[in-house]
Amino acid sequence: MNIHLFWKRRSKSASRGSIEDSLHRERFFRRVRPYAYLAPALTSMAVLSFLPIAYTVYVAFTDMSLYRFDKYNFIGFGNLVELFAGPFSKVFLPVFTWTVVFAALTTILNYALGLFLAILLNNPHLKESNVYRAILIIPWALPGTIAILSWTGVLNVSFGPVNTFLKMMGLTPVPWLTNPLWAKISILLVNLWLGYPFMMSACLGGLQSISAELYEAADIDGASSWQKFKYVTFPMLMRFSIPLLISTFAYNFNNFGMVFLLTGGGPPRLDTSFAGTTDIMATFSYKLTLQFYRYGLAGMMSMVMFLIVGTLTLIQMKLTNAFAEVD
Image 1 (cartoon, rainbow, N blue to C red):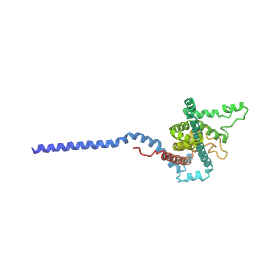
Image 2: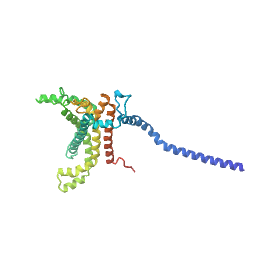
Image 3: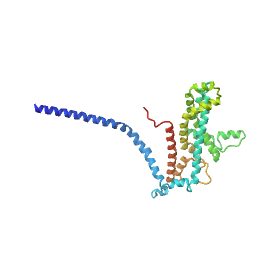
Image 4: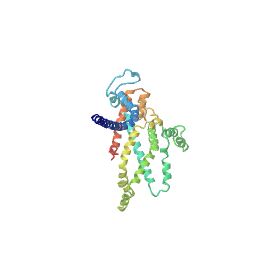
């Protein structure tokens, strides 16, 4: 009898232990499962993003180049000093200035034109507004690379259709891509043509989200069209426009494709062969790496771009409450 009770208790404790073990395993797998699902994505990010960034940061603090690939030295912030205060600053600072001017002007022009067209399309008295909207959005629908390469032909000095038309009208052809000033204007115009549809769509969505009661109250107060725009439309649009403008500026700050495909950074500068008159930091860094093999300087310039764009991105995410927890 005692032996029977002993084995019965032992079997109960064994079954209780097996149940607890299975519960522990289930809890463990429940905790590990999300990380297992994320593992492929995290591995890809580590290999394709984090490792190149870490290596770029490492190279930025050296004097590595093609000619010192195996015998480079750590120079600390020497490359940063070289860019902003050393002899190379005469090459870099004009590029940095044009990058900021290009990003700022592109953002302002795209937003201004997009807002103007959005206000026209939002007019309830405009007939066939959907047709106009479809036509105006065509530049956004085209592949950007093909569109930019097409513009290089359109603006060609010798046989481009724009200069051909000017000659037919008895006017002097414009050196769109061969004159430093006109090349910068060409970049701004082509980027405006490619960028305004996005701003137009964003502003149109913002306009349609503004309550009609605000305009009714403005009409009761006898406000003019300009006053309604100044005191109702524009302030309401700014609530979502500021993060949009910041993100657009950050994007254009690194708009490599526009400059590289349209002008290649040219026309050449007279004071240096390292950079052209329309080079921005992204294209200049590319040239330093693949044409002049100054890996350390290019790495430091990439870090400067990363810090600027990263700061702008954090500001944009803060303004849009991207870090806010969702209940």
